[in-house]
Image 1 (tube, helix red, strand yellow):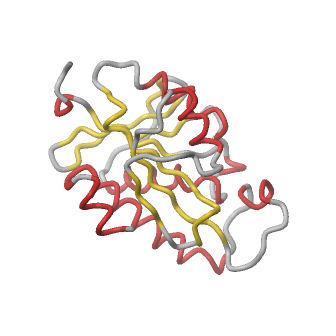
Image 2: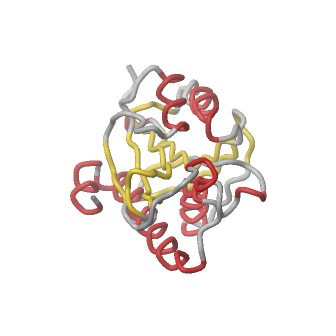
Image 3: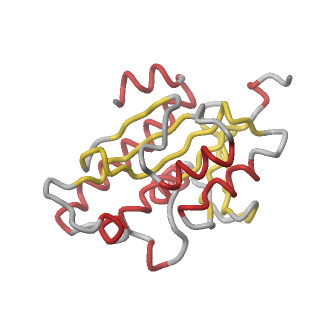
Length: 192
């Protein structure tokens, strides 16, 4: 088996492609990947495995930033395809998704775990046959009851939420960099 130090990190933000979904709650994963790419002065535009991919160096690690273009519920198809390349390994996979179980403004890092009802994570777990990969969940639950969950996640953020969204995306980008440069345990201690 090849040493993991030879493998690239794969940072996958979950979302739905297309202008209609660009700033919706369900697209926080895409927004986080876009912010990391902007911070690292790269672009996420190369097409591979039904995804848009960009490359950056964070610390001394090669990091591939990914936005699957399969729509949320089929994200596993893209991730499974990407992980077939020898320079990638599930042990260096970070998946960023929105989460209705966490309040807006909170993030949660975990080294592994269940899908928690998030259909993109569910599909990735099903396609990979493992839940042993790092995930970073971004809370979207508002401080009021939500009638139709499906409609809610596909809505844009309210103007009153924009500042919180920008802050949480910045924290998400910092948490991803922390996982890559310091390890998951240290990153969890700092960001959870």
